[in-house]
Image 1 (cartoon, one colour):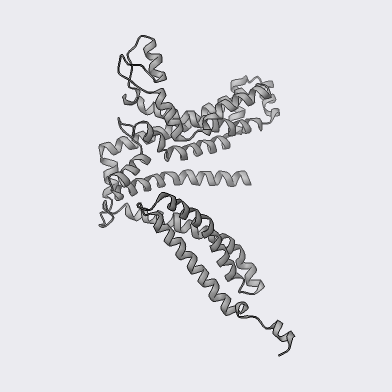
Image 2: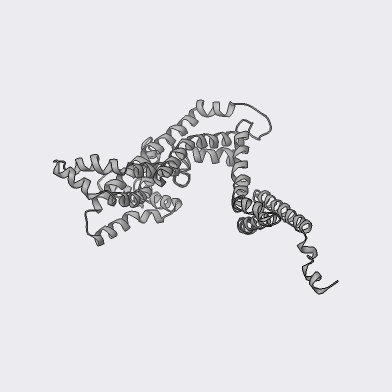
Length: 367
């Protein structure tokens, strides 16, 4: 055999059959590794450091391995077929990860919501009947409704008003004011809860009041008050923390939108005799209503899954419990996976219309 023929003849590793077997083997091994890692992460007895390391390896290395194996399979085909399937190869790892870690657990959660506390026996709509008829659960639903109604509305409204006001100052003053108002956004929900727990702190009469609110209240000659136990005002005090956190976010987004309102429209409104307030409601607000709705729905998403604030402040006691916290308590404290899953499904159903609205809004803005 000549040297030219030896060079042209493919090696064992270059033969299509060998490459196909290797690609499939890598693909199967990758899926097995990800599946094994998923079940390992669910092991509550595993060391935390090892769990974090496995999560990092799967999150980074697993996606890369999926892409590599899918790409190797695509390279086995001719140029025409390869070019057609390569875009799907790029999407496949993300789709596979989303399907395994989000879609499948979501389907499993829906299935568990129709089962008993341990997920062994089918009980139909019993978990949902309990949620919508039990007195304690009705309080949870009421509190969640109050959070969704009050927090996004006030945070967005305050953010819009502040955005319009600071827009009238000079550049330096505007930046300083915006920085102070936006500062709470840099604090985590847990950190903010710890801060406000000191603000609402209570000590019996005669003892030093470390809580800012009670220090002021007693300085005026009043007795200290256990603010977080007073119903229903304790819910409003917790909701105020969320408003404090999200007003800066709403201000920054809406400030950019306000600056984009054409001055010609505002000048035309003033020429027609409209004052500042009328120009604001008849020109500015209609022009940026898309941005307002986007900010509003974004904060609604955050409110629906709020957990940290209530957990740190009251642990859901004194009539302050909400769906996200009760879901955790049912599933992981009381070990009633059926009710916990039913609460998760209710949250999911509530979020779907908001998600559809946001997607439509993004498509319209893209057009």
